[in-house]
Amino acid sequence: MQNNDFEKLVQIQVEIADQILLIENEINHYQQLEKEMITKRERELYKNILGCKDEQVETEFGIHYIQVKLQQKRELYHHLTKAFKHRSEEYIQTLHG
Image 1 (cartoon, helix red, strand yellow):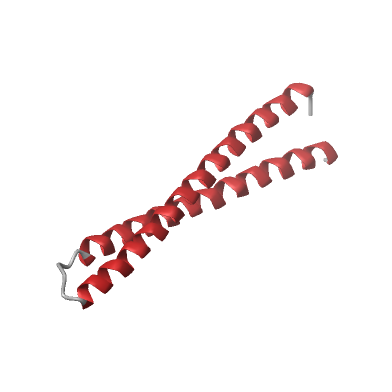
Image 2: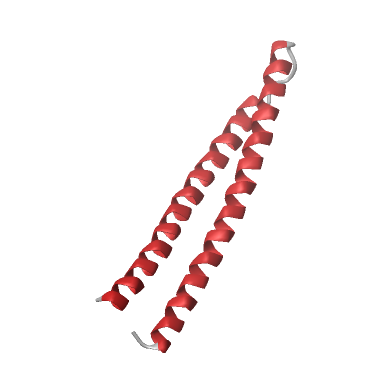
């Protein structure tokens, strides 16, 4: 493999790594949102027990939405880390092949 091929590999790996970092930040964001919504749910359950107005349905939808987004981000993260590893292994094989 020539130097130009190595530069292409590095560029691809940098792009994948940037995407991985972006997804990690998004996962952290959605995890924080999920935590906040679960806390809100607990407060609303307590209010509901006391006979206050029920906002729990809206919160449940919010939690579901956040959990769906979190799952999507985790799947994308897994795909990107797998692609990063695959590209590295592919390059190493061409060096030894």
